[in-house]
Length: 500
Image (cartoon, rainbow, N blue to C red; front, side):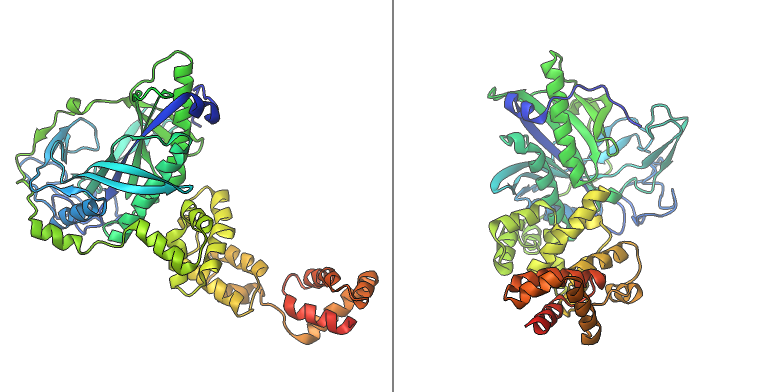
């Protein structure tokens, strides 16, 4: 288990004494059929080192060729982020030694990115924060190292390492923000909201499945603190490869408390990379962070520059999906949600899930109810994102259709969700297998009502005396006897008929 001796300052005290500055670097793995500079397939989950060739292995004499679909995806991402698109740009060699880099350099872009000077507005608790995009550039992914032996799975303490080069060369777009200042206590929420909205945008563009659990979108979280009101930027740390929205928020909060502990104790924050540990919710030191010039970038001589025509750029602009902010406003109006209801839906990361559930046939309020209550509770208990709880929007819509048809009620629907998470089949199959259907047969209900009246004579007399509200107690008794499977509306009717 990872341990830490970091001194942590309570979060409320941190925001009273310091101004945080955020920077987010998000790597998006594109869903092209082939890699960035060769024809190898990119399918996830193949046998190790089964999808490689001389080019992505960096063998002498192998020549790269740019993937046109990846360039198209980069331009569409840049346009959706309100970026300028370069009329001319080129690739560079980013040099550093690590086993997952078969060429000992990464083909990337340095001072000439394809997209630059963009922005995205994100809403947190009714307050809008403009996140400025410095650049979005093209590059290739690295291989995947697996460190064997040791207690942490890290290279330190491992007896040996294995490298899978299937991922080496897969097209990446790296989206880099400028420092985000002025968020104060909302900094962790702003970071989460930005990555969530960016992920939704990437999915809407159709350029990546944006599965954080599979690493197809990964966030590096930069954080620094400066004395309150100083107007300067402190020394930053970079927490690498944070792979869930929940962890983005937690990593920012943890680093703010840790930085404050270092500064409050008279120390200096070390500019370094940090590792995020999902199990313990802490970061630990990685390596001292190099400045850009230490990577020794050189122009890539084996690739021609990329010069997208303005006509092509405008053609791609016409393919963009609806702006996320405008889409939220439209959906709120269509669904009839209050500002608070919409804010909570977005904050829970449930907007797309509710939208898909509504598209599958559920009423908006019903869809929202299930995702923000029952399913959100399950996701929180399991420590996973809402989309990973094990239930699909189509299944939620089917559960609600069973409720609407009075086949089941809300209480029984929760047992259906249990069955869905356990993989017991469709909602209808689970209702049948578990015997969850609501009983509306008057014979069975009448007997249960008679039993409840006989067991509760005092309550029955109150109802006879005109105190109709007391019927709730008898209805509850009937529901208990019938394990929640009685039609509550029909039970109420029978109670009042028998005691009128």
